[in-house]
Length: 141
Image (cartoon, rainbow, N blue to C red; front, side, top):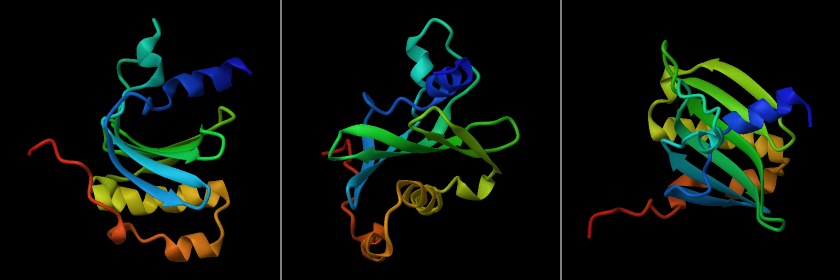
């Protein structure tokens, strides 16, 4: 792995030990939403304190139990910025997206990008209905 790939892997969101806001089945993958996800590098000595995420949607291969793709809404000085990370260390910036600050708007955009990358066929897309998913768990009882 090159140094560049290693940097991008360290700056991807850490969704492993943080509360899941929502999870959605998508073929052989699970899409998991985490709010306010910290950087994976936050556990490293060289953490980038200026970088954080409003939302992160992780695409997980359920058969192998590995993260394949992340779509993030990064906090930036001029407004939220949409990015993606691949399992091989790749990183892509999609630009400033203040229209995605609403959770539902982010979910639709992030899911489309994740399903494209993960190669989900049209049958998965047709059956993928966000509105039919159970609501995120609430902390109130």
